[in-house]
Image 1: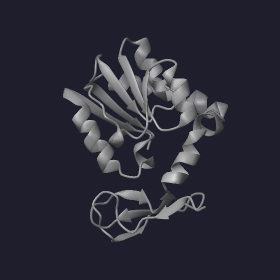
Image 2 (image 1 turned 30 degrees about the vertical axis):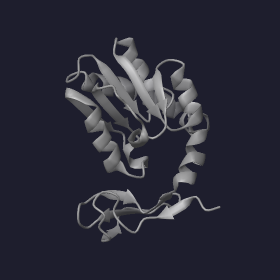
Image 3 (image 1 turned 60 degrees about the vertical axis):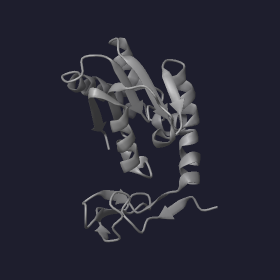
Image 4 (image 1 turned 180 degrees about the vertical axis):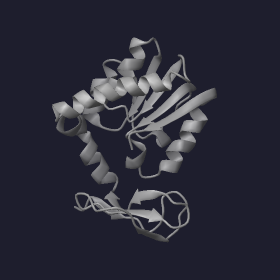
Length: 183
């Protein structure tokens, strides 16, 4: 069964006008929309492909390379210091939180930590430490409001990034922040 779909329209503005951007990576082709400028993967994993890839992503990819894990941990501290120039405390939602490792840094500093995770093994790991919801952000019923919504290395992986960002805006407290990084 094929796990790839080819987009004929920009996932942001629905334009059908695009041109190649960058080099193919592992057979995935990126393009830039001629109308809105969004850069996106044109031949991407479909819903089934995403489920299969992320079901065991934590253990088979995310934690596989110890040097990457070490560097990612260093980046968590750098990004935390940057974020806390603007957000001093409160409720944080990490979308695509993996095993909850970035949330761990916030929890150590008395934030109220929540996450959303799509992958099964990552959800199980993160749920041991934080309040985690399993699924896709734009399809979840969430009543909480957050001081901070984080997209760390995730927005480029979702099929409809606009719906995720719209949902994040709905979930923000009056003076809340959205933080997008590591795309």
